[in-house]
Length: 112
Length: 114
Image (cartoon, rainbow over all chains, first blue to last red; front, side):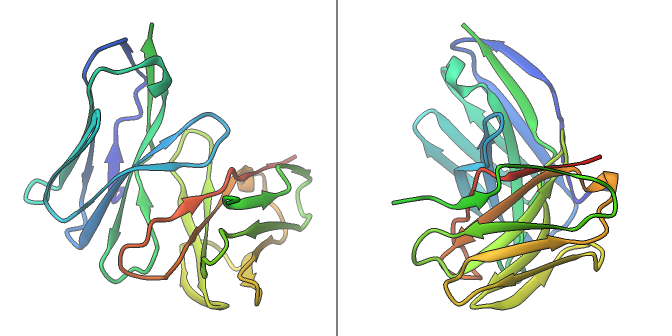
């Protein structure tokens, strides 16, 4: 079983929709939770970072972490065609240095 | 400021050959990590180096090796290439090795093994 599970999609939504992306994980030692956006043929770009449980909002993006359920989410409000990309969740333990464990990514298309 | 740079951009090799990939971190960053991203999957951690010392290694065979130079640039070497080594190889740099330090990823080197 993978440590981090993420629905690969693909997910297709109309412009302006609210998008919900999710990951589940099995290792309770994960403390840092991140969402990366990856455009085709580019490296991942950090969107959101959350430490332990809670919510974090940045513009149109909201990240939620529920450690009791081992479940994290990313919400995108007022989605735009420029949001079309692959979204990767990533996690790391307190003692794992910079080692990140990624989900397999969800491919999102926002249609104009 | 320049971001993380990687070379070459693309590479085609045949089975059994050896390959060297290069990474230059963001200026001032001392930690470099390498990841392998197979098409349709998330990146998998290979190595982390900090101050020229290996700080972590993922579940990869000994055919994979790396080093970090005094200027903090890094090389990833893969020997005896297999078809399954075809992937996007990503380098990420950060200022420190532990706690929370945002990792900045380069564009990657796309390796194709025929």
